[in-house]
Amino acid sequence: MEQADRARRAAEQELSECHEAMNDLSVQNQSIAANKRRCEAELDHLKQDLDDMGAEARSTEDKMRRAMMDASKLADELRMEQVTISFTLFLVRLVMLNTFIVTSN
Image 1 (cartoon, rainbow, N blue to C red):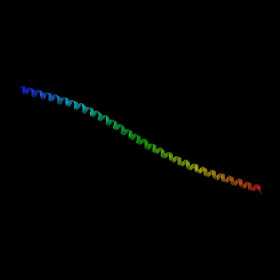
Image 2 (cartoon, rainbow, N blue to C red):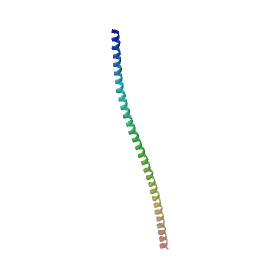
Image 3 (cartoon, helix red, strand yellow):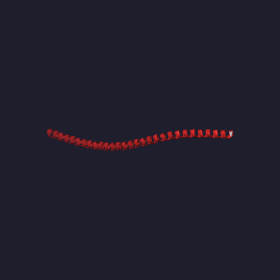
Image 4 (cartoon, rainbow, N blue to C red):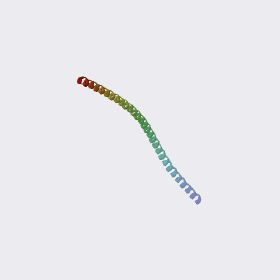
């Protein structure tokens, strides 16, 4: 009988330890699940940030391309203006030379 009581108390002690271990593991599991949810939320946030940055980069590249095209057009216009001015100056010199030649004779 005494041996049965010791065995029963040992079994009850083991059962109590198992319950305590199960409770500890349950708390750990809940903590891990909460951390997993936080990590997933952070990952979703980072993915959204990455998508936003990609869209911003594409927009910036488009703006840069347009700016380069505008700069190229302006450079072409400037070259044309320089050609026009050079030609005008050439004509003025011819007229002045012609005037000088006519007045010298």
